[in-house]
Image 1: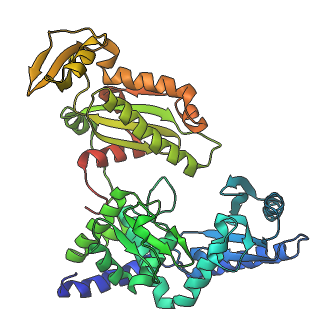
Image 2: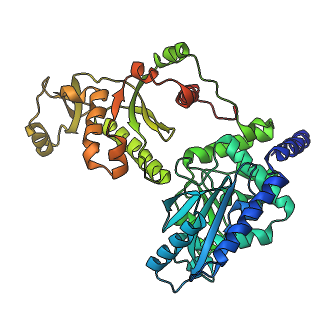
Image 3: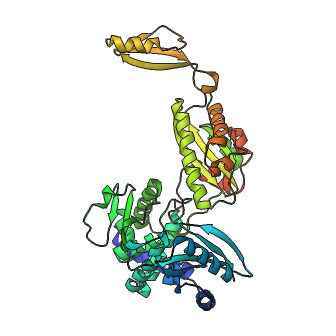
Length: 462
């Protein structure tokens, strides 16, 4: 809990932060005007659509200043077939964006998104259903989210949600996409609904344990048996859905740490982060001398939805680390960075090269049958077998290409150019393993800031 003398300070900080994050009236007026223009246009079109619904945080009045997003849903009767829904939704979307920049994007169904008058607009088709657990497509429950929170939230609650969103954004734990592995806006709003406000939510987060389950009504089963994430927030409109499914363990722990630290020493830095000043290259060189480091430099695939790409990047990061571990290299940390142009998969190892001799521990020496089979395997022994702690131990010669972490990684890159998913194939088309010296050739811009933050080992709020 926050010390009593800190609560007054927190109140002042929140008041100051709200002045910076609540959208100005002019922005809100432009937003509503654009919605009404699009609504009139859609309602005047021929087609089987029933209505246009404005959803998301902007519709609920919980969005942050500068978040100029309009999530618009063209709703159809649930009896319509999926192919027809897709065709009709795309037709309406393209008509709305006529004369403006747009692109086709993909969720469960393709939809149209683009920019109109400085706002990021999405036109998404969906079905009208009676309840959130009767959905035909993933987007069908979104109108229920809107209805629930518009009914529950007062004007004060909306600003409490804004404060918690900015807090999560400031500590780097906010966002629904796979790039961030964080908490979506709707999940943040549900925390405010559960705890009653920003400060009470932070106090609640500070007390979370190894896993936390948040529900809004009594359930017949334990959600902890259905979902295997550190935080489980059961969607009040669909009890089969965990709103916090994308949240990583690292970000869950970060949320708890930030909440405790904020209550102890409240500061605006928790809301806006601390600017990372990239170290001079000389300092990076000195720090890297203390570590063993390799990276794979690659290209971010274009023409694939970034959220899909980020999922593939994280899987590949783990697969390459596993490849190293299977060859007896100890991977201390693995990290992926991208500006959605270049990609760096980074690996910090215990050592870059292994000794010529590989020690293999076999069965117990008194297990004669298994010892015989163990020794009959064709291996080039460097020494005669010996016994250690009752087990047969042999030393075999490692192949040259299995002694070098760089060679193993490059071999894995070459193999994955043909055997991986399309996104990773494109990513690794020019993939190259870099040594510490070669990594420094790319030490500039946002990558320099990221590497500095990695080497410092500090959070955004420290």
